[in-house]
Length: 375
Image 1 (spheres, rainbow, N blue to C red):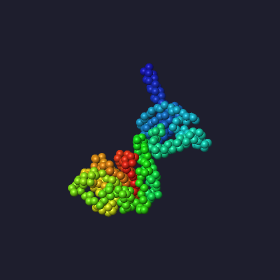
Image 2 (image 1 turned 120 degrees about the vertical axis):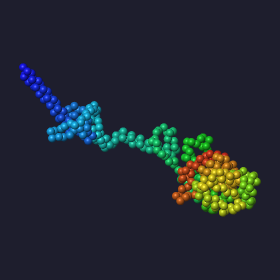
Image 3 (image 1 turned 90 degrees about the vertical axis):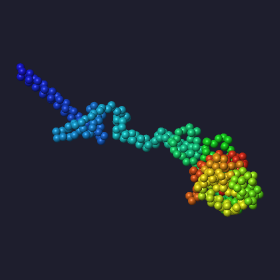
Image 4 (image 1 turned 180 degrees about the vertical axis):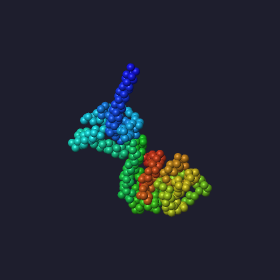
């Protein structure tokens, strides 16, 4: 009886071992099938269950006795949705089917939807060009990608005498509008009249050495009265000369705006050679090697013609050293440098000039107290 019991126990143990061995074999076969279907990312698909199984590549190793699992981590994933044709989303077959479908649509003429997309693209390009021209992207009711746009610059009209005052005034006014765009208030939208632009004589060119000759033609018979030509205007003591003549200090009759300090030096040198010591009093108002405090002290005396750069002129006006009540002519130096740039082609100088013009000069031009000369 004891033997039978032992035999029974032994039989049940052997049956249990066989059952475990069978399950073990099934599991090994399943892993071998998964390994065979694995891709580079270590993902496999169980064909029977239809579920994705992810395992570690390093966890499956081959041995002489077959397949041995060292480390195994399995995760089941839900079945992916299917698309037309029965292919799984994201599979190579599904993507190939999509490409084939799109290629077929393009060959047939891209249908109405494709044509609509082309029309939309053309409209977007057109709207973008319009927004660059008038800087009104927000008012047009559409959102464009944020790109850094350059303000459109108008070409400078010829300054050889062939351009009329109307052409010059239109160019100056349009450049002003383009620079400030919708920042301009309704009070500032009055156009610059053509009589506010000086029409220079064609008898002499616009060389810097001929500037005094042109200025005398502009002032006419009032030249000697305005500048006191022939009189000794040198003050007896610093700061007293302006009071003796009854003219407030730091109030020039002519203001020349240049693109750089070096250009200011050239202009003032040519003026000094032309007018001599008994001519108009000159002042250099630029930042290079000159302190604001020294220029403020200089402007306490009489000044007839001043040449400077926009940024320093704005600074001197803001501190009250430079007065514009006596100003009659604004000379814009249109000289081209080595790179053929004028003051309107250099972004920093252009921005500084328009800020100065808008804050200090524009209203005087509209009120016909000031004339502009493009020289």
